[in-house]
Image (cartoon, rainbow, N blue to C red; front, top):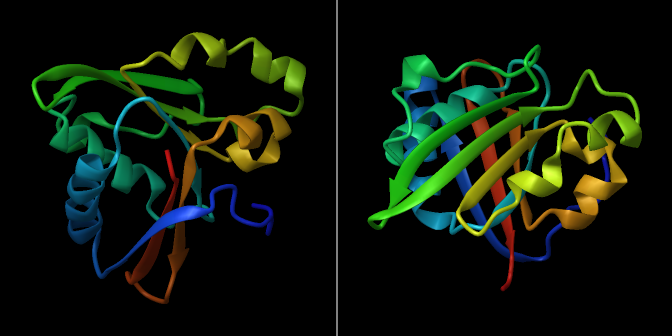
Length: 158
């Protein structure tokens, strides 16, 4: 993970969690804050709970049960279909950790994912300038020791 400045200057929301279940609950709260279309960087060291947070977002959107959401480390993209305020919403969870170049990134078809009804969450997206430029915000998860996590969400003003 890079220590780059936040991509977004705007509304900031902070949460502290003390367990995986609590992180899922925060995901439910975040789902209410995220209005498509959004492309968010999902930043945090390995094991900080990025996928756990996505479990809560997916569950809140009725897109998947928490146990159906897994890390897309090897598949690169997981797609879930849900609803928000009675409207269809697509949730894309990407992990670009294994990609090394912008050319490899282009093969994912990120542009095609960015539809008006999409929430796109990209783990390790801060590695790529093209993703940082398109991002409408970021979610940063940091370990505070043990199971305690600090989750900082910054959303660009629209």
